[in-house]
Picture 1: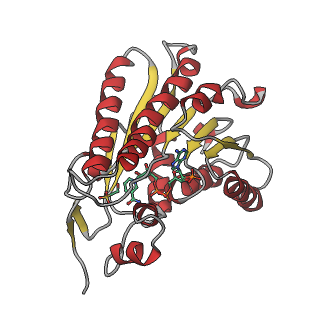
Picture 2: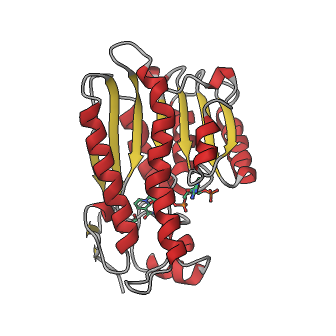
Length: 265
Ligand code: NDP
Ligand code: 8X3
């Protein structure tokens, strides 16, 4: 917790699921002088998350909710310059915002779904990284700071009905691995955390708001929670500076691959 003291942390997609849990876990772990910048499209929900954090850990943590659509390059470009002065020195960027749309297979995948998945999961993550990296690179030793990218088992193991989502997460993985090599002469840590099945709003979004279809995904299984992944994110950020938790795959105990799940009937 001491290592995180005084840090400025950005979490994208902090209005729900893994991102919301991550924001709370940082606040709980290091409630002293932490500066949390919470971003997502739903600003009202972010404000609720900020209030919950304040209520839980008190005023040692400064929380700034910022409305930001990572798929909109103009919004990402103006993100850093529009931050209040005391929040500009970002130390940790958690690129978590992401989504899946549908289970359609080629040639029936809606153009809009393809676009939103790539614009958010890939281009959004890359643009956020490019916006924040100059802040890291100005620091000593060639640069300091953490980029923590939330990938997925889907990026390692493509499955039918998920071709675009899987391709988007494979792109995250390639971008992350290349960047770690590019930044080898710096103290910037490039970290990827790949969850297996986590119960969040993920499946509700996949099924365009159909809660019963989403619930069916988790029927008879025991998925991870957002908090489980949040603990891994905060652990990685809290290591000694020379320790890079470069690449982590996290399953619930009844999952062994993208499509290998033990289901109680
Ligand atoms: P949720 O749907 O619960 O949360 C997704 C978050 O991303 C929301 O806060 C949402 O906020 C935000 N988001 C979506 N689109 C945008 C956008 N254009 N700009 C900014 N924020 C956006 O899902 P999860 O918590 O499960 O997902 C988080 C990450 O984890 C994603 O990258 C997902 O791919 C990954 N993941 C999830 C797994 C799972 O099984 N749940 C497994 C492996 C990886 P808002 O709508 O307010 O913008
Ligand atoms: C989410 C995991 O396998 O449901 O990234 O696509 S999966």
